[in-house]
Amino acid sequence: MPVFSPPKGTKWFSPTVIGIAFAVIVVIIFLATSIYFVDQTEEAVVTRFGKYLDTGGPGPHIKLPFGIDKNYNVNVKTVQTEQFGFRTLSSGIQSTYSGDISEATMLTGDLNIIDVEWIIQYRIMDPRAWVFNVQERSRTIRDVSRSVINMLVGDRPIMDIMGSERSAIEAAGTDIMNETFRGYGLGINVIAVKLQNIDPPSGVQEAFDDVNKAEQDMNRLINEGQQAYNAEIPRARGERERLIQEAQGYGTERVNKARGDVARFLSVYEEYRRAPEVTRQRLYYEMVEDVFTDEEKTILIDRNFENFLPLQDLGSGRASGGISGGER
Image (cartoon, rainbow, N blue to C red; front, side, top):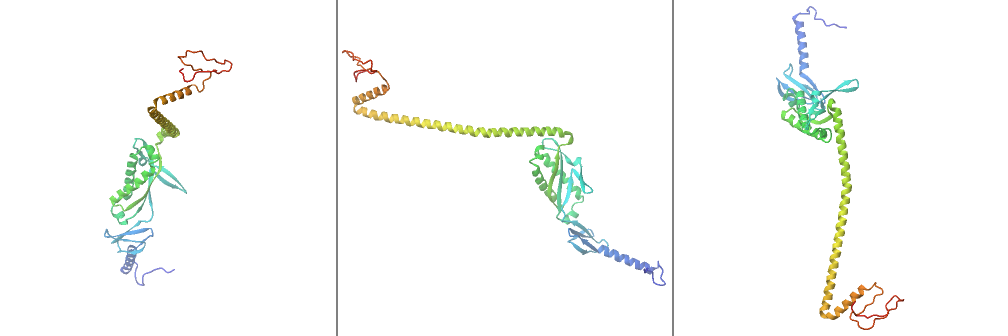
C-alpha cells in the first residue's frame, strides 16, 4: 500500500510540506462551506453577512464560502404537531401519555375545573419570516395556543365544552391562532386544532359523574314530558275544533230555523191581513188537529150547550157523537 511521503530531500515539517497541507485544508474548507444541499421537503433561506439574500428550492446550491453566506434549511412540506396537556412517549412500538397538569387544568365559564388535552397541527408557509421575525418560535406557538384555548374554554359551561361546543372550540381556536400568528409575522398556518381528552379533575370525578347522571335524568324526564305534551295537545286541539264546529253547526241550524219560522209567520200574517176570519178559523183547526192527533176517547162539546147530552158507546172505546166546531 503506497504511503505519502515528501519529495526526496524534503523534511516533514519543512515549509513546502506545511504549505501543501495548508492549501489542501483551505480547499476542503472552501468546498465544504460553498456547497449545500436542500431536501425535497425544504426551502433554504440564504443570508450574506447576516442579511437576507435569497430563498432556494430543493437540490444542490453554491454560496460564498467561509461563512460569508449562510443557509438555513426550513421544512415547509411536513405538517408539524404540538401537544398540550400530555406528551407522547415512544416505548418500542407503543406510545404512552404523560399528562401536563399546568397546561391541561382550566377554569370553565360556569366556574368548574376541567382538564383539557389538545394538539395543533401547522405548516411553515413563509421560511424567511420563520427564520427572522420571531426568536422563540416554539415557545411563542405554545403560549399563543394555551392562551386561545383557555379563553374559549373560559367562555363556556363545562357540559357544553364536553358536548355540543367541542367542534366550535376547535374551529374558533384555528381562526384565532392564525390571526395572532399573522400579526406576529411567524410565517406559519395552523391547519387544525383537535381537542383530545376532556375530563374533570380526578378529585371531583365521582361528584361530576353524579351531576352528569342527574342531568341525564333531567333531560330524560323533559323528553318524556315533551312526548306526552306532543301526544295530548294535538288531541285536545282536535277536540276543541270538533266542539267549535258542532257549535257553529248548531248555531247555523238554529238561525236557519228561526229565519224559516219568521218567513212562515210573515206569510201567514200576510194571509191573515187579507182575510182575518178565514185565517183565524184555519189556524184554530190546525191547532186542534195538532193537539188531539194522538188522543183517544175525547169528546168536544159546546160550553153553552143546553140540549140533551150526546150518547156514547161505552163498549166501542170511542164517542158515538159529538159536536164539532165548539169550544173545549
